[in-house]
Image (cartoon, rainbow, N blue to C red; front, top):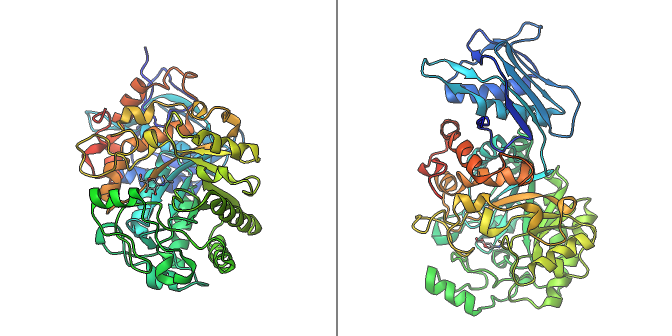
Length: 505
Ligand code: TNX
Protein backbone atom coordinates (compact mmCIF):
# COMPACT_ATOMS: atom_id res chain seq x y z
CA UNK A 1 0.00 0.00 0.00
CA UNK A 2 1.20 3.52 -0.81
CA UNK A 3 1.55 5.74 2.24
CA UNK A 4 -0.56 8.86 1.86
CA UNK A 5 1.23 12.21 2.13
CA UNK A 6 1.08 13.29 5.81
CA UNK A 7 -1.61 15.92 5.41
CA UNK A 8 -4.07 16.75 8.24
CA UNK A 9 -6.95 17.22 7.80
CA UNK A 10 -7.05 14.49 5.18
CA UNK A 11 -7.59 16.00 1.69
CA UNK A 12 -10.37 14.76 -0.60
CA UNK A 13 -7.66 13.29 -2.81
CA UNK A 14 -3.89 13.22 -2.52
CA UNK A 15 -1.67 10.98 -4.58
CA UNK A 16 2.03 10.67 -4.86
CA UNK A 17 3.10 11.06 -8.49
CA UNK A 18 5.92 9.23 -10.15
CA UNK A 19 9.09 11.25 -10.53
CA UNK A 20 11.42 13.25 -8.37
CA UNK A 21 10.58 15.75 -5.66
CA UNK A 22 10.86 19.51 -6.03
CA UNK A 23 13.98 20.76 -4.32
CA UNK A 24 13.46 24.05 -2.52
CA UNK A 25 16.33 26.53 -2.45
CA UNK A 26 16.83 30.28 -2.36
CA UNK A 27 16.95 30.09 -6.13
CA UNK A 28 13.23 29.18 -6.18
CA UNK A 29 11.09 31.95 -7.66
CA UNK A 30 7.65 32.61 -6.14
CA UNK A 31 4.87 34.07 -8.27
CA UNK A 32 1.17 34.83 -8.02
CA UNK A 33 -0.80 36.06 -5.05
CA UNK A 34 1.35 38.18 -2.67
CA UNK A 35 -0.60 37.38 0.50
CA UNK A 36 -0.41 33.64 -0.19
CA UNK A 37 3.35 34.04 -0.80
CA UNK A 38 3.62 35.85 2.53
CA UNK A 39 1.73 33.01 4.26
CA UNK A 40 4.06 30.45 2.66
CA UNK A 41 7.13 32.42 3.70
CA UNK A 42 5.92 32.53 7.31
CA UNK A 43 5.92 28.73 7.28
CA UNK A 44 9.27 28.42 5.50
CA UNK A 45 10.93 30.87 7.86
CA UNK A 46 9.52 29.11 10.93
CA UNK A 47 10.84 25.70 9.90
CA UNK A 48 14.15 27.18 8.74
CA UNK A 49 13.71 26.38 5.03
CA UNK A 50 14.95 28.65 2.22
CA UNK A 51 12.31 31.29 1.44
CA UNK A 52 13.07 31.74 -2.28
CA UNK A 53 12.69 35.07 -4.04
CA UNK A 54 9.96 36.87 -5.97
CA UNK A 55 9.66 35.92 -9.64
CA UNK A 56 10.18 38.85 -11.98
CA UNK A 57 6.76 39.03 -13.60
CA UNK A 58 6.89 35.52 -15.06
CA UNK A 59 5.47 32.28 -13.67
CA UNK A 60 7.81 31.15 -10.90
CA UNK A 61 8.84 27.73 -9.67
CA UNK A 62 6.20 28.08 -6.97
CA UNK A 63 3.07 29.61 -8.45
CA UNK A 64 0.21 30.58 -6.13
CA UNK A 65 -2.98 31.66 -7.86
CA UNK A 66 -6.69 32.18 -7.33
CA UNK A 67 -8.42 30.89 -10.44
CA UNK A 68 -12.07 31.00 -9.39
CA UNK A 69 -12.81 27.38 -10.24
CA UNK A 70 -14.14 24.74 -7.86
CA UNK A 71 -16.13 24.79 -4.62
CA UNK A 72 -15.65 27.58 -2.05
CA UNK A 73 -12.38 27.20 -0.09
CA UNK A 74 -11.13 24.43 -2.41
CA UNK A 75 -7.70 24.20 -4.00
CA UNK A 76 -5.58 22.02 -6.25
CA UNK A 77 -1.89 21.48 -5.63
CA UNK A 78 0.51 19.88 -8.08
CA UNK A 79 4.17 19.38 -7.28
CA UNK A 80 6.89 17.73 -9.34
CA UNK A 81 10.61 18.15 -9.93
CA UNK A 82 9.99 21.32 -11.96
CA UNK A 83 7.93 23.21 -9.46
CA UNK A 84 4.76 23.61 -7.42
CA UNK A 85 1.49 25.14 -8.48
CA UNK A 86 -1.41 25.83 -6.13
CA UNK A 87 -4.69 27.08 -7.55
CA UNK A 88 -7.36 28.17 -5.09
CA UNK A 89 -11.01 28.61 -5.97
CA UNK A 90 -10.78 31.72 -3.80
CA UNK A 91 -8.27 33.37 -1.47
CA UNK A 92 -9.23 31.00 1.37
CA UNK A 93 -8.71 27.95 -0.85
CA UNK A 94 -5.29 29.20 -1.87
CA UNK A 95 -4.41 29.82 1.78
CA UNK A 96 -5.41 26.22 2.60
CA UNK A 97 -3.31 24.94 -0.28
CA UNK A 98 -0.36 26.79 1.21
CA UNK A 99 -1.02 25.11 4.58
CA UNK A 100 -0.98 21.74 2.83
CA UNK A 101 2.29 22.66 1.12
CA UNK A 102 3.78 23.46 4.54
CA UNK A 103 2.82 19.97 5.74
CA UNK A 104 4.37 18.32 2.67
CA UNK A 105 7.76 19.95 3.16
CA UNK A 106 10.46 17.56 4.32
CA UNK A 107 14.08 17.96 5.20
CA UNK A 108 16.16 15.08 3.96
CA UNK A 109 19.26 13.55 5.54
CA UNK A 110 21.38 15.53 3.11
CA UNK A 111 19.91 18.74 4.56
CA UNK A 112 17.90 19.53 1.43
CA UNK A 113 14.30 20.74 1.66
CA UNK A 114 11.94 18.95 -0.68
CA UNK A 115 8.29 18.81 -1.72
CA UNK A 116 7.43 15.30 -2.90
CA UNK A 117 5.81 14.87 -6.30
CA UNK A 118 2.07 14.91 -5.50
CA UNK A 119 -1.33 15.86 -6.84
CA UNK A 120 -3.83 17.09 -4.29
CA UNK A 121 -7.44 18.05 -4.93
CA UNK A 122 -9.19 19.29 -1.84
CA UNK A 123 -12.34 20.97 -0.56
CA UNK A 124 -13.94 21.18 2.89
CA UNK A 125 -16.83 18.95 3.91
CA UNK A 126 -18.37 21.59 6.22
CA UNK A 127 -18.58 25.36 5.81
CA UNK A 128 -18.21 26.02 9.56
CA UNK A 129 -15.02 24.63 11.11
CA UNK A 130 -14.58 26.11 14.53
CA UNK A 131 -12.47 26.29 17.61
CA UNK A 132 -13.76 27.96 20.76
CA UNK A 133 -11.64 29.64 23.38
CA UNK A 134 -13.10 30.52 26.79
CA UNK A 135 -11.50 33.83 27.79
CA UNK A 136 -13.90 34.21 30.74
CA UNK A 137 -12.82 31.50 33.22
CA UNK A 138 -9.25 32.61 32.63
CA UNK A 139 -8.54 35.69 30.59
CA UNK A 140 -6.21 35.17 27.62
CA UNK A 141 -4.61 38.27 26.10
CA UNK A 142 -4.60 39.25 22.42
CA UNK A 143 -1.19 37.66 21.74
CA UNK A 144 -2.42 34.30 23.03
CA UNK A 145 -5.60 34.51 20.98
CA UNK A 146 -3.53 35.34 17.89
CA UNK A 147 -1.26 32.38 18.54
CA UNK A 148 -4.30 30.12 18.79
CA UNK A 149 -5.68 31.59 15.53
CA UNK A 150 -2.39 30.68 13.81
CA UNK A 151 -2.52 27.13 15.11
CA UNK A 152 -6.16 26.69 14.09
CA UNK A 153 -5.89 28.33 10.66
CA UNK A 154 -2.99 26.00 9.80
CA UNK A 155 -5.43 23.10 10.32
CA UNK A 156 -7.99 24.78 8.02
CA UNK A 157 -10.36 25.94 10.78
CA UNK A 158 -12.28 29.03 9.69
CA UNK A 159 -14.20 30.06 12.83
CA UNK A 160 -12.93 31.35 16.16
CA UNK A 161 -15.73 31.34 18.74
CA UNK A 162 -14.82 33.50 21.74
CA UNK A 163 -16.68 32.84 25.00
CA UNK A 164 -16.53 36.43 26.25
CA UNK A 165 -18.57 36.45 29.45
CA UNK A 166 -19.27 34.06 32.27
CA UNK A 167 -19.77 33.95 36.02
CA UNK A 168 -16.09 34.61 36.66
CA UNK A 169 -15.63 37.69 34.48
CA UNK A 170 -16.73 39.99 31.68
CA UNK A 171 -14.04 40.23 28.97
CA UNK A 172 -15.16 42.71 26.31
CA UNK A 173 -15.43 46.47 26.68
CA UNK A 174 -19.04 47.52 25.96
CA UNK A 175 -19.18 51.30 25.40
CA UNK A 176 -22.90 51.55 26.18
CA UNK A 177 -22.41 49.64 29.47
CA UNK A 178 -18.91 50.60 30.66
CA UNK A 179 -19.36 49.21 34.19
CA UNK A 180 -19.19 45.66 32.86
CA UNK A 181 -15.44 45.78 32.31
CA UNK A 182 -14.80 48.46 34.97
CA UNK A 183 -16.26 46.31 37.73
CA UNK A 184 -16.52 42.74 36.51
CA UNK A 185 -13.33 41.91 34.62
CA UNK A 186 -10.78 41.65 37.42
CA UNK A 187 -11.40 38.06 38.51
CA UNK A 188 -11.02 34.54 37.16
CA UNK A 189 -11.11 30.94 38.36
CA UNK A 190 -8.68 30.34 41.20
CA UNK A 191 -7.94 34.02 41.85
CA UNK A 192 -5.54 34.30 38.91
CA UNK A 193 -6.47 37.89 38.14
CA UNK A 194 -8.49 39.06 35.18
CA UNK A 195 -8.44 41.25 32.14
CA UNK A 196 -10.58 42.26 29.19
CA UNK A 197 -10.35 43.23 25.54
CA UNK A 198 -10.79 46.90 24.72
CA UNK A 199 -12.75 47.58 21.56
CA UNK A 200 -9.44 48.10 19.75
CA UNK A 201 -8.02 44.83 21.09
CA UNK A 202 -11.07 43.04 19.84
CA UNK A 203 -10.86 44.71 16.40
CA UNK A 204 -7.25 43.55 16.20
CA UNK A 205 -8.32 39.97 16.90
CA UNK A 206 -11.06 40.15 14.26
CA UNK A 207 -8.60 41.54 11.69
CA UNK A 208 -5.89 39.01 12.56
CA UNK A 209 -8.41 36.21 12.19
CA UNK A 210 -9.76 37.60 8.90
CA UNK A 211 -6.24 37.74 7.45
CA UNK A 212 -6.11 33.98 8.09
CA UNK A 213 -9.61 33.38 6.72
CA UNK A 214 -11.19 32.94 10.13
CA UNK A 215 -14.46 34.54 11.23
CA UNK A 216 -14.90 35.47 14.87
CA UNK A 217 -18.15 34.37 16.54
CA UNK A 218 -18.59 36.31 19.79
CA UNK A 219 -20.58 34.71 22.61
CA UNK A 220 -22.40 36.54 25.37
CA UNK A 221 -23.73 33.67 27.48
CA UNK A 222 -27.39 34.16 28.59
CA UNK A 223 -29.46 34.04 30.73
CA UNK A 224 -27.26 31.93 33.03
CA UNK A 225 -23.47 32.19 33.32
CA UNK A 226 -24.07 35.85 34.15
CA UNK A 227 -22.86 36.23 37.74
CA UNK A 228 -20.32 38.84 36.56
CA UNK A 229 -23.21 41.13 35.61
CA UNK A 230 -24.18 41.28 39.29
CA UNK A 231 -20.91 43.11 40.03
CA UNK A 232 -21.70 45.87 37.53
CA UNK A 233 -25.51 46.05 37.32
CA UNK A 234 -26.74 44.23 40.46
CA UNK A 235 -30.35 45.19 39.75
CA UNK A 236 -30.30 43.01 36.60
CA UNK A 237 -29.11 39.79 38.24
CA UNK A 238 -30.94 37.26 40.41
CA UNK A 239 -29.52 35.95 43.68
CA UNK A 240 -27.34 32.85 43.10
CA UNK A 241 -29.25 29.54 43.27
CA UNK A 242 -27.19 27.25 45.52
CA UNK A 243 -28.00 23.77 44.22
CA UNK A 244 -26.43 20.51 45.38
CA UNK A 245 -24.22 20.67 42.29
CA UNK A 246 -22.84 24.04 43.39
CA UNK A 247 -22.17 22.73 46.92
CA UNK A 248 -20.55 19.54 45.55
CA UNK A 249 -18.31 21.54 43.21
CA UNK A 250 -17.15 23.69 46.11
CA UNK A 251 -16.39 20.51 48.09
CA UNK A 252 -14.35 18.94 45.28
CA UNK A 253 -12.66 21.94 43.68
CA UNK A 254 -12.69 24.52 46.50
CA UNK A 255 -13.59 28.20 46.04
CA UNK A 256 -16.38 29.73 48.13
CA UNK A 257 -20.10 29.87 47.39
CA UNK A 258 -21.11 32.55 44.89
CA UNK A 259 -22.43 35.78 46.42
CA UNK A 260 -24.44 38.39 44.57
CA UNK A 261 -22.27 41.37 43.64
CA UNK A 262 -19.01 39.70 44.71
CA UNK A 263 -16.41 38.24 42.32
CA UNK A 264 -16.83 34.49 41.86
CA UNK A 265 -13.60 32.50 41.43
CA UNK A 266 -14.85 28.92 41.72
CA UNK A 267 -15.80 26.38 39.04
CA UNK A 268 -19.48 25.69 39.72
CA UNK A 269 -21.97 26.29 36.91
CA UNK A 270 -25.68 26.95 36.60
CA UNK A 271 -26.33 29.15 39.65
CA UNK A 272 -26.68 32.58 38.04
CA UNK A 273 -29.37 34.26 35.97
CA UNK A 274 -30.35 37.64 34.69
CA UNK A 275 -33.76 38.86 35.91
CA UNK A 276 -35.80 37.45 33.10
CA UNK A 277 -39.13 39.18 33.70
CA UNK A 278 -37.64 42.68 34.07
CA UNK A 279 -37.87 44.83 30.96
CA UNK A 280 -34.63 46.58 31.96
CA UNK A 281 -32.82 43.31 31.27
CA UNK A 282 -33.77 43.53 27.59
CA UNK A 283 -32.71 47.17 27.34
CA UNK A 284 -29.38 45.93 28.69
CA UNK A 285 -29.24 43.09 26.16
CA UNK A 286 -30.08 45.49 23.31
CA UNK A 287 -27.17 47.68 24.36
CA UNK A 288 -24.70 44.86 24.85
CA UNK A 289 -25.62 42.87 21.74
CA UNK A 290 -25.70 46.00 19.55
CA UNK A 291 -22.18 46.88 20.64
CA UNK A 292 -21.02 43.32 20.05
CA UNK A 293 -22.71 43.19 16.63
CA UNK A 294 -21.02 46.41 15.58
CA UNK A 295 -17.62 44.78 16.20
CA UNK A 296 -18.65 41.69 14.24
CA UNK A 297 -18.29 41.52 10.47
CA UNK A 298 -19.23 37.81 10.53
CA UNK A 299 -22.82 36.56 10.30
CA UNK A 300 -23.15 34.88 13.73
CA UNK A 301 -23.73 36.07 17.28
CA UNK A 302 -23.83 33.42 20.02
CA UNK A 303 -26.12 34.02 22.98
CA UNK A 304 -25.32 30.95 25.07
CA UNK A 305 -28.34 29.32 26.65
CA UNK A 306 -26.48 26.51 28.44
CA UNK A 307 -26.88 25.32 31.99
CA UNK A 308 -29.52 27.76 33.24
CA UNK A 309 -30.04 25.30 36.06
CA UNK A 310 -31.79 27.58 38.54
CA UNK A 311 -34.24 28.95 35.97
CA UNK A 312 -37.73 27.58 35.22
CA UNK A 313 -38.33 26.20 31.72
CA UNK A 314 -40.83 29.00 31.02
CA UNK A 315 -38.46 31.74 32.06
CA UNK A 316 -35.58 30.16 30.16
CA UNK A 317 -37.71 29.93 27.00
CA UNK A 318 -38.85 33.51 27.37
CA UNK A 319 -35.28 34.79 27.80
CA UNK A 320 -33.89 32.85 24.83
CA UNK A 321 -36.77 33.91 22.58
CA UNK A 322 -36.12 37.56 23.43
CA UNK A 323 -32.34 37.25 23.10
CA UNK A 324 -32.48 35.54 19.70
CA UNK A 325 -35.06 38.08 18.51
CA UNK A 326 -32.67 40.90 19.43
CA UNK A 327 -29.88 39.20 17.48
CA UNK A 328 -32.00 38.78 14.34
CA UNK A 329 -33.07 42.42 14.71
CA UNK A 330 -29.40 43.35 14.52
CA UNK A 331 -29.09 41.52 11.21
CA UNK A 332 -27.14 38.58 12.64
CA UNK A 333 -27.92 34.87 12.82
CA UNK A 334 -28.23 33.72 16.44
CA UNK A 335 -26.32 30.69 17.68
CA UNK A 336 -27.16 29.00 21.00
CA UNK A 337 -26.13 25.89 22.91
CA UNK A 338 -28.51 23.00 22.30
CA UNK A 339 -30.58 23.50 25.48
CA UNK A 340 -32.28 26.48 23.83
CA UNK A 341 -33.80 24.11 21.25
CA UNK A 342 -36.45 23.51 23.93
CA UNK A 343 -37.58 27.14 23.79
CA UNK A 344 -40.74 27.31 21.62
CA UNK A 345 -40.26 30.97 20.72
CA UNK A 346 -36.64 30.73 19.60
CA UNK A 347 -36.01 32.86 16.48
CA UNK A 348 -36.40 30.90 13.23
CA UNK A 349 -33.08 29.94 11.70
CA UNK A 350 -31.17 29.94 15.01
CA UNK A 351 -28.12 27.67 14.83
CA UNK A 352 -27.91 25.04 17.59
CA UNK A 353 -24.58 23.96 19.05
CA UNK A 354 -24.73 20.37 20.33
CA UNK A 355 -22.44 19.65 23.27
CA UNK A 356 -23.80 16.30 24.44
CA UNK A 357 -21.96 13.02 23.97
CA UNK A 358 -21.31 11.18 20.70
CA UNK A 359 -24.23 9.00 21.79
CA UNK A 360 -26.84 11.50 23.00
CA UNK A 361 -28.34 11.22 26.50
CA UNK A 362 -31.15 12.95 28.39
CA UNK A 363 -33.13 14.17 25.37
CA UNK A 364 -30.30 16.38 24.12
CA UNK A 365 -30.92 15.00 20.63
CA UNK A 366 -34.58 16.13 20.76
CA UNK A 367 -33.51 19.65 21.66
CA UNK A 368 -30.99 19.60 18.82
CA UNK A 369 -33.50 18.37 16.23
CA UNK A 370 -35.75 21.29 17.20
CA UNK A 371 -33.29 23.74 15.59
CA UNK A 372 -33.61 21.93 12.27
CA UNK A 373 -37.41 21.93 12.59
CA UNK A 374 -37.23 25.74 12.88
CA UNK A 375 -35.08 26.12 9.78
CA UNK A 376 -31.74 26.29 11.55
CA UNK A 377 -28.69 24.10 11.28
CA UNK A 378 -26.44 22.44 13.82
CA UNK A 379 -22.82 22.79 14.91
CA UNK A 380 -21.49 19.60 16.49
CA UNK A 381 -19.23 19.80 19.54
CA UNK A 382 -19.60 16.35 21.13
CA UNK A 383 -18.05 16.75 24.56
CA UNK A 384 -16.66 13.22 24.93
CA UNK A 385 -14.80 13.58 21.63
CA UNK A 386 -13.71 17.16 20.96
CA UNK A 387 -13.98 19.09 24.23
CA UNK A 388 -10.31 19.98 24.27
CA UNK A 389 -10.47 20.85 27.97
CA UNK A 390 -10.98 17.19 28.90
CA UNK A 391 -7.84 15.51 30.21
CA UNK A 392 -6.14 13.47 27.47
CA UNK A 393 -5.17 10.85 30.07
CA UNK A 394 -6.34 10.28 33.66
CA UNK A 395 -3.07 11.50 35.19
CA UNK A 396 -2.76 14.65 33.08
CA UNK A 397 -2.03 17.65 35.33
CA UNK A 398 -4.72 19.95 33.91
CA UNK A 399 -8.14 19.47 32.37
CA UNK A 400 -11.50 18.07 33.44
CA UNK A 401 -13.03 14.59 33.20
CA UNK A 402 -16.81 14.99 33.31
CA UNK A 403 -17.26 13.91 29.67
CA UNK A 404 -16.85 10.13 30.23
CA UNK A 405 -13.40 10.42 31.73
CA UNK A 406 -10.18 11.25 29.94
CA UNK A 407 -10.48 11.69 26.14
CA UNK A 408 -7.72 9.94 24.23
CA UNK A 409 -6.62 11.04 20.79
CA UNK A 410 -8.23 7.91 19.41
CA UNK A 411 -11.58 8.78 20.98
CA UNK A 412 -11.26 12.38 19.75
CA UNK A 413 -10.88 10.97 16.24
CA UNK A 414 -13.34 8.09 16.22
CA UNK A 415 -16.76 9.58 15.56
CA UNK A 416 -18.79 10.52 12.52
CA UNK A 417 -20.59 13.90 12.49
CA UNK A 418 -23.59 12.67 10.47
CA UNK A 419 -24.22 9.86 12.98
CA UNK A 420 -24.35 11.81 16.25
CA UNK A 421 -27.91 13.15 16.35
CA UNK A 422 -30.55 11.01 14.61
CA UNK A 423 -32.35 13.06 11.96
CA UNK A 424 -29.53 15.62 11.80
CA UNK A 425 -27.74 14.53 8.65
CA UNK A 426 -25.18 16.02 6.32
CA UNK A 427 -27.40 18.82 5.02
CA UNK A 428 -28.53 19.84 8.52
CA UNK A 429 -24.98 20.14 9.82
CA UNK A 430 -23.40 23.56 9.46
CA UNK A 431 -20.15 22.30 10.89
CA UNK A 432 -18.00 21.06 13.72
CA UNK A 433 -16.42 23.02 16.56
CA UNK A 434 -13.89 22.06 19.23
CA UNK A 435 -14.34 24.09 22.43
CA UNK A 436 -11.60 24.74 24.97
CA UNK A 437 -13.02 25.81 28.33
CA UNK A 438 -10.39 27.30 30.59
CA UNK A 439 -11.25 26.57 34.20
CA UNK A 440 -7.86 24.79 34.50
CA UNK A 441 -6.10 26.60 31.64
CA UNK A 442 -3.97 29.61 32.54
CA UNK A 443 -1.76 30.37 29.55
CA UNK A 444 -0.73 29.42 26.02
CA UNK A 445 1.39 26.50 27.23
CA UNK A 446 -1.71 25.06 28.96
CA UNK A 447 -3.78 25.67 25.82
CA UNK A 448 -1.23 23.82 23.71
CA UNK A 449 -0.93 21.00 26.22
CA UNK A 450 -4.66 20.26 26.00
CA UNK A 451 -5.34 21.20 22.37
CA UNK A 452 -2.51 19.27 20.72
CA UNK A 453 -2.79 16.87 19.07
CA UNK A 454 -6.55 16.42 19.60
CA UNK A 455 -7.34 19.67 17.75
CA UNK A 456 -6.13 17.87 14.62
CA UNK A 457 -8.77 15.16 15.10
CA UNK A 458 -11.45 17.86 15.27
CA UNK A 459 -10.02 19.47 12.12
CA UNK A 460 -10.36 16.19 10.27
CA UNK A 461 -13.99 15.77 11.39
CA UNK A 462 -14.72 19.31 10.17
CA UNK A 463 -12.85 19.28 6.85
CA UNK A 464 -12.28 15.76 5.56
CA UNK A 465 -14.54 13.32 3.70
CA UNK A 466 -16.93 11.40 5.91
CA UNK A 467 -15.70 8.29 7.65
CA UNK A 468 -16.00 5.19 5.48
CA UNK A 469 -15.87 7.16 2.23
CA UNK A 470 -12.09 7.32 1.84
CA UNK A 471 -9.47 4.62 2.52
CA UNK A 472 -7.30 6.96 4.63
CA UNK A 473 -10.07 8.46 6.75
CA UNK A 474 -9.15 6.02 9.52
CA UNK A 475 -7.60 6.21 12.95
CA UNK A 476 -4.50 4.27 11.82
CA UNK A 477 -3.84 6.64 8.96
CA UNK A 478 -4.62 9.72 11.05
CA UNK A 479 -2.30 8.65 13.85
CA UNK A 480 0.62 8.40 11.42
CA UNK A 481 -0.21 11.59 9.55
CA UNK A 482 -0.60 13.58 12.78
CA UNK A 483 2.64 12.20 14.22
CA UNK A 484 4.47 13.42 11.11
CA UNK A 485 3.34 16.99 11.83
CA UNK A 486 5.05 17.32 15.19
CA UNK A 487 8.13 19.15 13.82
CA UNK A 488 5.89 21.62 11.96
CA UNK A 489 3.85 22.23 15.13
CA UNK A 490 7.06 22.76 17.08
CA UNK A 491 8.16 25.32 14.51
CA UNK A 492 4.87 27.15 15.09
CA UNK A 493 5.76 27.40 18.77
CA UNK A 494 3.54 24.59 20.08
CA UNK A 495 5.32 23.99 23.31
CA UNK A 496 4.14 20.78 24.75
CA UNK A 497 5.30 17.20 24.88
CA UNK A 498 1.66 16.31 24.23
CA UNK A 499 2.34 17.39 20.64
CA UNK A 500 3.89 13.95 20.32
CA UNK A 501 0.88 12.78 18.36
CA UNK A 502 -0.05 9.19 18.87
CA UNK A 503 1.51 9.19 22.31
CA UNK A 504 -1.79 9.70 24.09
CA UNK A 505 -3.93 6.79 22.94
C1 TNX B 1 -19.90 22.78 30.36
S1 TNX B 1 -20.41 23.05 27.53
C2 TNX B 1 -20.12 24.12 30.06
C3 TNX B 1 -19.12 25.12 30.45
C4 TNX B 1 -17.97 24.50 31.20
C5 TNX B 1 -17.59 23.20 30.56
C6 TNX B 1 -16.37 22.57 31.12
C7 TNX B 1 -21.23 24.19 28.00
C8 TNX B 1 -22.12 24.74 27.00
N1 TNX B 1 -21.13 24.57 29.27
O1 TNX B 1 -19.72 26.13 31.21
O2 TNX B 1 -16.91 25.40 31.16
O3 TNX B 1 -18.68 22.32 30.67
O4 TNX B 1 -15.98 21.47 30.38
